[in-house]
Image (cartoon, rainbow, N blue to C red; front, side):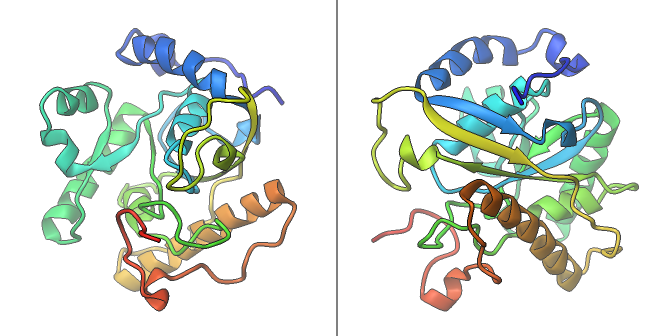
Length: 253
């Protein structure tokens, strides 16, 4: 499957995404030949939360280009602090990126509710990395996730669909914490989307429910990655705390 579909209204409307795509899409095309499967699972219209795995600093570009090719504008959930940076903050706001607070408290809960309501009202999607940082799993399987994706999805009056996504092959372009490889160009990168995660059993936003819902999302992402790799994913997700590792930031060797 080529991964190309009819463009949605949000892609056809002039926006800051147009000049960005004119630069980013050809540049990424030098590095990667992106093959997309499961395109039918990404809604052509309406809100969604797209949840990919994360194992290379380059994979957000792959996810962005794949999302654009599928006819949707690639909006990410980004650290709240980035919105305070001059110029960058204006660009993030101008493209509809979604700020996320690191700490989970009543103010963050209110912010999440507002963001969720806006996504539904504006019929937009957002890309959220549930792991929050590059996986610490030594074999690059998805590790334990954070609750941001499901918090956003469950905050809506009618839950927003969470679409799991897995990519594989990006590590041949930029290894985790490694150096960018320019040659050979057009390395094969596979992208696989799955059906929306079944979150019907998760009817509240208590910490236990959010953790269980996140586990369900990470399970589906790992299953998709297993299909791409032709391997069986681990039964449980890697927990950095159990291995003396920090949950966020660069993992030092």
